[in-house]
Length: 404
Picture 1 (cartoon, rainbow, N blue to C red):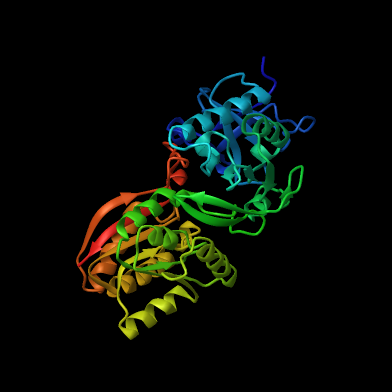
Picture 2: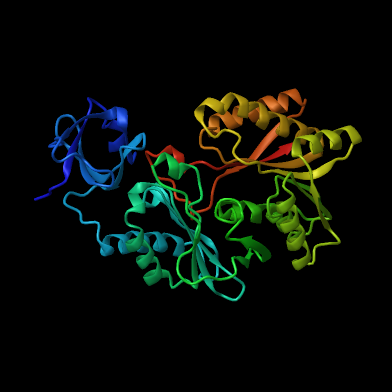
């Protein structure tokens, strides 16, 4: 019989959980059974979650320091969180990736709640020598307390050459956890080169943004390559130059990649050289907002423009401000597209949903006096599954449009 403490929710608070939502917020809890002064519930404890009427909802990990009091790990009763449990979860995630990726591909292996391992991100990188590197992020207490079992399971199933931890993010502090960063086990050179869509890309596991590289846009980049033949291309918020390099690979006549970060631009220039793209592609360090204004002022026009900015809306409170930012870059991009030009525009903020994104694009088109045809709507690659009932897992929007 389970010795876990029982958490009962307030009336009707189970509705979203029954639809697949994996969190219990602190203000949704009605009571904790057997939580007395002599045996108070401890952070990191396994707990069973019930509706007010007593229906079992799932088992998870309790954390009083977070507004997310419980992250649900399993919907089964009497589950044991042993090594076999985590091996099964990781193997299930691998099986999904095997459907769309080869052994030589880099991809996101674990997408946190969407792969039923809350707060855990694992990227699988394969360098040009065929060595597998894993980058792990433990973002929540829920999986932090099982880190040894998880690392052991990853070693068993993935046989990595090295594992680098990038738990150097503010969200850990909201979980009552210190930030961490560094090799787990043997140290290696953290700067590697991977190949994606035929393009060589430098990835800095130690200092690159987030986990070193944004794997979610792989198939959208490939689409850009298909659209780029003989076109003059502008690639903004370029980060590593990946979109621009795909345009080069697809036969673009010229490519300009822009980013405000000097470190990012140095990486882009390295990638340009190693892909022998110098005659076609150049990198410019500039604020994208200012760059778009200058291009419009100077009358410079493009056949294809990619807008892949960082998340402007990092909270629900910032949506209105983000709307203005997204609208400005899209409006100005439309103004410097040639007649019939192609706009590839993205948002990676889950707070800025698809309806809001489409509305913004419509108003940007109106104010730039352009008519826009949406040719395709896409999102993240299949290594970023979407969990029904958990909207946050559907975060990336990518619209490919013809601007007339």
